[in-house]
Image: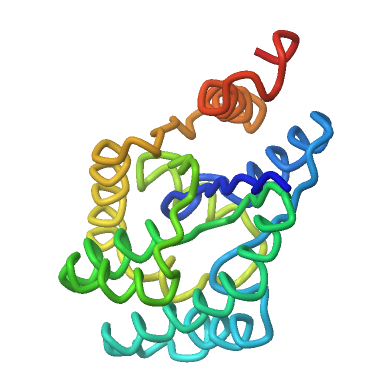
Length: 215
C-alpha cells in the first residue's frame, strides 16, 4: 500500500488556519483522496487534556520548559495514535499545527534554544517530517483584529502581547523560508482568496495528483 501524505497548516493567531484546514480537506476529498483531519495540541485523550491546560488552565503562565514538555507529550500521542496509522494506511493527513508551532512559539516566542527543541522533537516524532508545510502569514495587528470579532474567550497565547506575537510571526517567516518542504502563503483577503492560494501551493507540491482540471 502506498503511504499517505502529511500536510500541515501553520501560522500565528488570527490567520485562519482552522477554516483553511477544513477547506483543504474538502478539496482533497473531492479529488477522491482519503483524508484525516487533525490538530495540535489535542486529538487524543492525552492531547486534549494537555490542550486545555496549555490554553486555559494556567493564565498566570507556565515555565517555558514545562510548556515545551507538555506540548511534546501531546505530540508523541498525536503521532502514535493519529498521524502514523493514517499515513501507513494510505490516507492524507491535514493537520492544524505541528512542530513548526513549537519552534515559532516556544523557540522564537519564549526563547528556548532551537537546537534543543529540534532534538526533543525528533525523539517524540521518530523523525517524522510533513510532506508540506503551508505557513499562513498575516500582520499581527490584523490577526488580532480578526480575533476581536469572535465571540469567545481568548487563550494564553492570544493574550501574550504584541511583542510576543511579532516574534512568533518572524519565526514562522524565517522557518518557512529555510525549509524546502514549506511554502509561505499570504493570509490577507477573503477566506476564498486564501483557499485558492493554498490549493495552488498544494497542486504544485504534488504534481500529477490532481490532474490538469484542478491545476
